[in-house]
Image (cartoon, rainbow, N blue to C red; front, top):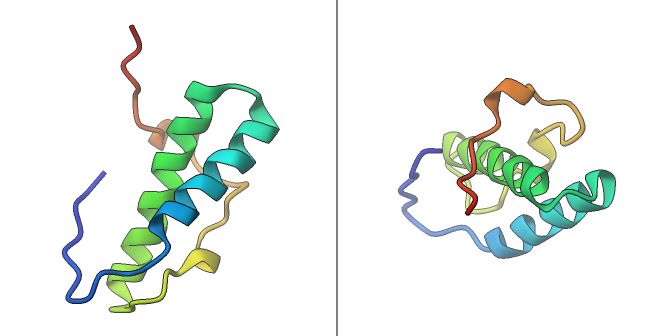
Length: 78
């Protein structure tokens, strides 16, 4: 996961995160797996938004059902 510095911060990142997490959770019923997917997919949207130099989130630039599982970030659990 990378940090992106926007000239003008895009709106809707919290809504995006919530929607992706809910969709992932409804399909997996696994909160940890859903979190991993959400972080990966939200990061992809943010990268595409940053690359486009856009204030509007590029939510349609990501295929939410087709991603490389090897790219999922690890999660520390206790």
